[in-house]
Image (cartoon, rainbow, N blue to C red; front, side):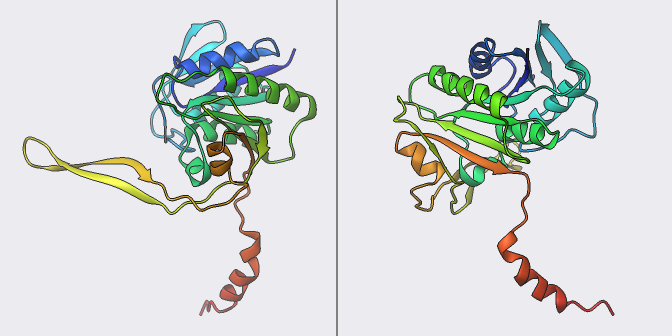
Length: 250
């Protein structure tokens, strides 16, 4: 029976990870290894300057006092004692779109699986005003996981999946959207009148593109974006070569 490692950034006790484990259990031997507490916006952080601990809550259910990236590494090295057949990160409470994937701990969990040579998916559910219903996202995750287990993924490629809060119109393959970034930083003062700061969610100004993950999700479709670990800007190679020729070393 195949093995699936499940992680997330909302925490080991979140509703999303429980829905994901339930959905994937008919397909494989599923093991959940996730942060003890919420690790949203942790990005691809790896804990290097303090020890990490693993708590075993039940069979195949573990918490780590670290990031999603830590969780994947500890799962492979000390929980599973080897590579799983698939890593699925999620289900995140809130979408992970466009440039924001660089902040996402959910996406980082899948990225770390990819870097370890494991086919990987990140699954996120769009927020709604009501309590989040993960059933549709869980169904999509199950079907995609089954397909990836059977067919694999291209080398150094993983999938970033975003599911609408309402019943989806279907599934579309998308590109990563772009936006004009502007972080919201709020300055406050403590009782001693010393300043402190809160970084709030960024103000979004998305560029219009019919095939972008943002637009497709907004229009009511499931967005599936193939992402890669190679950040090389291939189209800029010749320009940078011209710049490099002008550098003098003496």
